[in-house]
Amino acid sequence: MRDFRYNWVMKTNTSTITISTSEYESLKSRKAELETLVKWYEEQFRLVKRRQFGQSSEKTQIPEQLGMFDEAEMSEDQKEPEPTSEQITYTRKKRVGKREDDLSGLPVEVIEYELTECHCPECGEALHTMGKDTRRELTIIPAQVKVTEHVRNVYTCRNCEKTTNRSTIVKALMPEPVIKGSLASPSAVAHIMTQKYVTYTPLYRQEAEFLRQGIALSRQTMANWIIKSAEDWLEPIYERMRIQLLAHDVLHADETVVQVLKEPGKKANTNSYMWLYRTSGDATQPIVLYEYQPTRSSSHPKRFLSGWSGYLHTDGYAGYHTLPDVTVIGCWAHMRRKFDEVLTTMKPEDRKDSNAHKGLEFCNRLFALEREFEDLPPNERYEKRLAQSKPVAEAFFAWAQKLGALPKASIGKALTYAEDQRKWLMNIYCDGRLELSNNRAERSIKPFVMGRKNWLFCNTTKGARASSVIYSIIETAKECGLKPFEYLKFLFETMPNITMSTINDLLPWSDSLPTICRVGK
Image 1 (tube, helix red, strand yellow):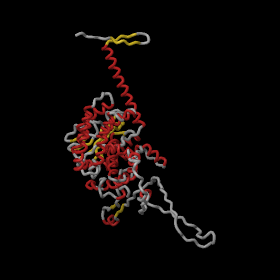
Image 2 (cartoon, one colour):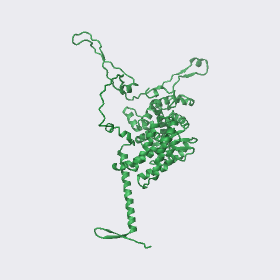
Image 3 (tube, rainbow, N blue to C red):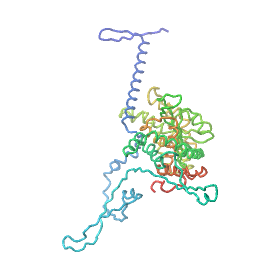
């Protein structure tokens, strides 16, 4: 058989270039590769712009919702006769306004104004009260700082001094301080912690605010108070909460970076990690625990969860997949996010019929079914998922497996992620108590991320450890309906004066906590 070879002629303005077929095919392949690369760079550019300036929500409108705004036009029928008018009247009790509801838990100070001369300006006769005009205002009392002196009387027996060679001395009872030998009070430490870990106010800003009030309280002193109080009084609460956490069968986990400046053996600009473990939605006593670790090694969750077995919701990080006796549950929200990101990189006119839109529709259908099942007991939810949700998930993976995509394209990465995570994503159908996403853990780790944007880094490993303990106490208290400041103040007032045997009465879900610690009280 003869081997036919053709020469391809390319004309330019000045000359003619002749190339072989193999060279032409090579250039053609290179051209396609460069076009794909340019398209990928355009997608990444749009994605970065979206992350920087676009909305963070990934919610999409489902078809039923889209029709709500043009319902009249969709259901219009020109042949339908006009309905006859009908007037219906009824009476109902006037609802108290939302403002009244919001102010119902606040103390009320009444200031009443009266005439000094209660006589008619026309005839001079005495006036009587016919009614009252009332105006309500919200009055703010700024934080006040004062010095409290604890003076304990010391008594001695004069008779013993006269009749014996010894002197009897008796001291009045006085509560122990939260930190011995310092000016720290329970309220001061609770206030500083609440400002930093709840309202995200760094210590240097608190230092400046104290200085404006005429108080020279350095950030170093406040940092020492935070670390010492966390080590002495909050860590025992933390350890007891950890025992309770590991008694649950279903947990969530996540991790995020934290920078620690003075960490042995590491440069200041390297990443350390804050790990998070929390209970799932089926828990009656919500628990949120943070743990600081210098790396992202899988050895850390393996040590933290040592001896525990159950279902663990995670993102796609492979470090969780090697945990012994643990069934990892993948996050469909992360799967959905992959397609959502691809969709945002595309031109609007190309989105509707794209593979990214089809993948997003599969995920949206699964989440829509979850909303239908959320009020069901776990056993019924399990059956409903197997009957309605699992076929949708299986159809999604069958579609993703058949679909071919270029490796460098974003849709290709989304499909590769789907195939890699299939085993763990399908574990959602193992138990009715499980959740479709790991959003619960992401919401719990968000307060730490928000705080990190303000205070940026931890100075020492002791500070990072203290922060993990304090965040755990505060976030669990919030989940249990407690006021962080009042709860911390109560702990610092109580724990120095009790034995560890009564610590269960101080846990965030305890019924023994004072009413003032609870929101709305």
